[in-house]
Amino acid sequence: MNSQIVTLVVTFQARPGKEAELRALLTGMLAPTRQEAGCLNYDLHAAPDDPSRFLIYENWAGKAFHEAHDKTPHVQNLRAHIHELAFQPVKTFWEKIGSF
Image (cartoon, rainbow, N blue to C red):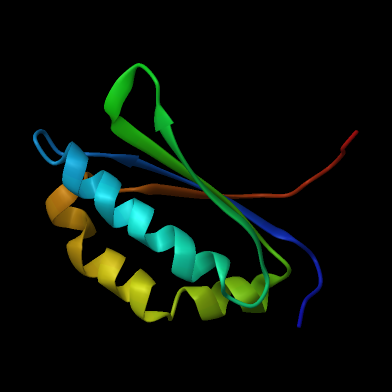
């Protein structure tokens, strides 16, 4: 397994009237994802000024762990419902270049 930490930020914009359903779907991802091997953190955020915007900040112990996460039943469930609840999510990978 690749030991380099994989960091992702995924943003979601709920479709009008679907904010509560999207929030519930994303919240349901927290417990099972946090139990996965290699999950360092998996945090859900809501925009304080816009109840339709959400962000997931996640760190994985390596690329293989994230790839395994993408194949889990809870991710497949998210993919099956996301387009009815949200516009196209934006997923970006990040590389840590410093810390304090």
